[in-house]
Length: 313
Image (cartoon, rainbow, N blue to C red; front, top):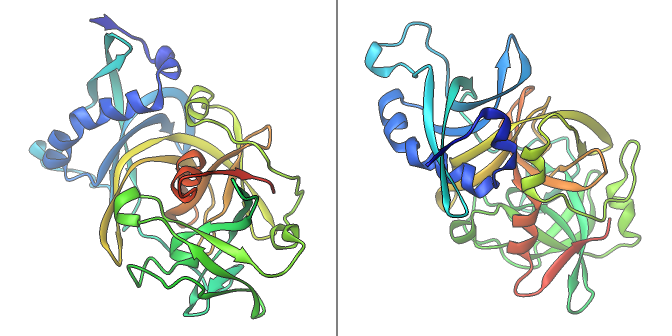
């Protein structure tokens, strides 16, 4: 057993960090009533500090909780790396996320013909191997109506702002089985890039591995959403986050948590790093302050259907 310092957390794999949180989650969720836990950067007076902590995500903060329900000042985690186990004691932080839901808006970019009020942003154009077919990647609750139906029908039309049909639903991974809220759309109109015009737009063709995200917590990130580019700051990794869908409550094993002025209609927005590499897909958040994203690696893997997907724009 070795003891690690907070400065060394960046060197651990994200999966190892998530497992260390799961090792303490059940006990502390039961005791404090927290919705879920995570690990990330501590916030002091509204600003992110270069200090790692265990995050308790709650609906709202309570000024004077009962002693038996209070969040501890620190928690010891056991992190496995290779054949070694490391024990590390971290301070805690409480994050109020409200009634965390997937939110859509009627003023965004694309939507399913059967759910015109549930609109979101296009994520990227992807190419499948083998075959070379290209698709538009989008959030599943936007293109496949995951909030209202368990299985949308293939070929449901997808429209863009203004009512123009741009394509049809091609595939959506089994949400209950994969915990990936995404969908592929077959585009009917070229050029593909027309559907992804953004402020300061540059082609995004590579991805940033999730382990590199928490390894560089102070890096700058950007949410690309419907003609806008919004700055983001990495806050941490959220584990086992429960979200309600038509199929029931889906638990996301690992989400990337960012400090960002997200809003309804941002669903499906692509998050990129300083090198313009794809990092994640925004799927839910707290309006004006929090963004939770699926790692783009997981999204592409779940949508590949036995092949592989590469972002081409």
